[in-house]
Length: 74
Image (tube, rainbow, N blue to C red; front, side):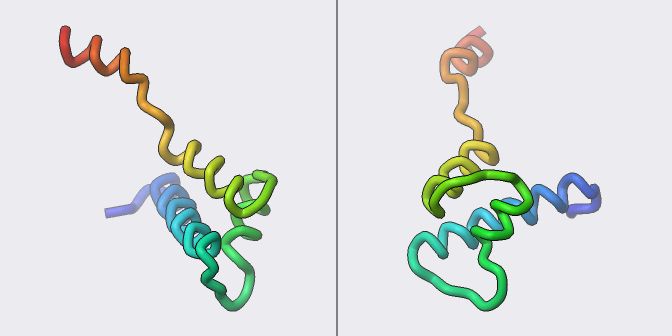
């Protein structure tokens, strides 16, 4: 269950990220776009695809494979 303010904010940002994916694919929505909301709240710039990619990197940082191997094989 999401009860912490930080958890709720992250869930909302992840939801906006998924909405932006649909906008990149061509879906439209009424009111302000997820693209506009994300740009306004995060300060990211660029096209829809570039903002989607940047936000994806923020929400899902790449794993350090070598570090994981060292941890799990130790």
